[in-house]
Image 1 (tube, helix red, strand yellow):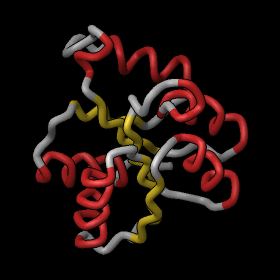
Image 2: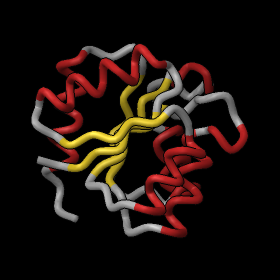
Image 3: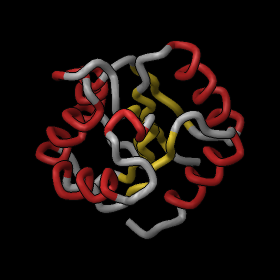
Length: 132
């Protein structure tokens, strides 16, 4: 069992992700944006963060939260869920490279939205299996 932080602004998606993760026997804390996500990271240790990249920009944004988190927490594995076409970087690995450089992300699975729940469960299992 892992302790997982879910940061997703859309309530329906956030609740569905929590249901899937709890069904896989993980302990889950879910919040609605990067501001609340960073507050959780500063007060608790997590094995994994599942983060929506695009949550309205500014301080609420997933990449902003990850950028700040790398300065205040131990290295954290991440599954980044995003509509990559939003960035014009679909399918070429460019978004993953930007996130690695900008946010200090070491362990990363980029999961384009919309995703199948089986894809999500596989992404979570694969990144949790990586050594810390």
